[in-house]
Length: 217
Image (cartoon, rainbow, N blue to C red; front, side):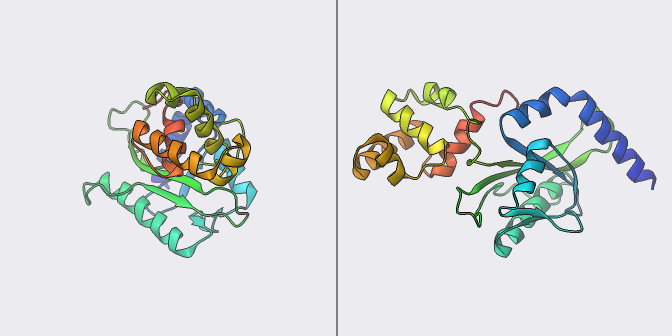
């Protein structure tokens, strides 16, 4: 009971002290789940709850554990969360912390990132140690901006337009239709974009768009 009370106080401090930061994450369309060492979600922001309400491949079980549409992906997410929490104890070595999750609707995959969160400086209250899970929904329109990554990669106007369409959730073939060019042209431009941004899959391009807009470490 005492541990639950302490954790509750810690979370209230987190909400109060970092309310502005969490609001920014909401506005940018970044869903945030705090997951404890038992795998239970102990807190989430508004965007995370919006994603859950969609009922499109991401859900909470009765025991408040994150569940993906694919059972294999659910196990993979559980393993990554366990690694993140294990790092806080020094029990494991860092591993892959990124995951994509398919959606029954056929919309572009959720992009999931898992990090360790520990209040080592006692800036909030001692005792907050958990996995910090962020979820990006590429299907949410008008959330991510490509301006930062266009400047970062020194992309041409055409390349920037392609990236903008990718971030909106369009597939390469759909991008070709939108721009009235051949698929081969889009593929050639995507290759150039990948070299400039040092990333290749469409999911990595979307992550880069998010990373270059979020003003938080």
